[in-house]
Length: 250
Image (cartoon, rainbow, N blue to C red; front, side):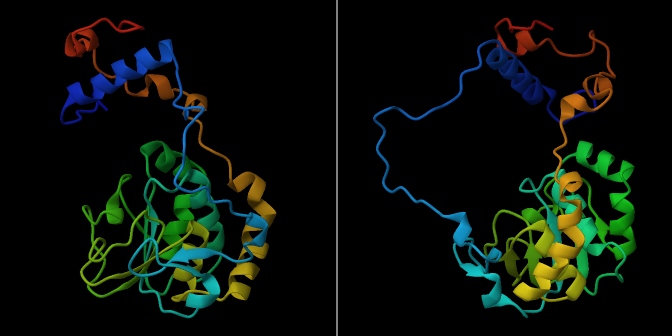
């Protein structure tokens, strides 16, 4: 990021230096042995038989899919830091071979590495055929700071929050999975439990082992060297920024 002209290279290089220090002595946070908790909540996942969503407009307004099925959906956002590359593959599978979406579909991978791999795998072509608007990797609609949905739209999103006016003026925002979001985009409404179950069983389950594979940056050919496009002389010294030597030096 520093090599590509990030606004304040010192900020990035401070993080690099701190990470080097941590790697030299990696200590993970853990609770004290005598820690006390206000409440311990145990959830039996075997009792959850259908998707759960956050309904408009509060992340604590939790509903079962069967309680909100049929509500219209004007716009869909698949993006934010809550998603990983497998979610985009799965969402594309839902849309593959279908007619273009009836409403507006926004797709925004969280990183440029995800974007590059999804293009190489042909996933972007599937999104393009569905009529999706592809956003620059980053936050996009999640915070409404790079784009906004239409006023008073009903939205289904994979983002982290659905507070009033966060994604658009007067927007009603549901939060749920990328797979369910893609189904909403396809139908123009929230599917029934039966409809969604059929989509998952036909379009996702047979390919799940290949879809849900993480993108490991250390396994990307040339990843470590990709950002090294400026000379050592041009880059500020990390130790000078921090005022201390780093574990790995330069």
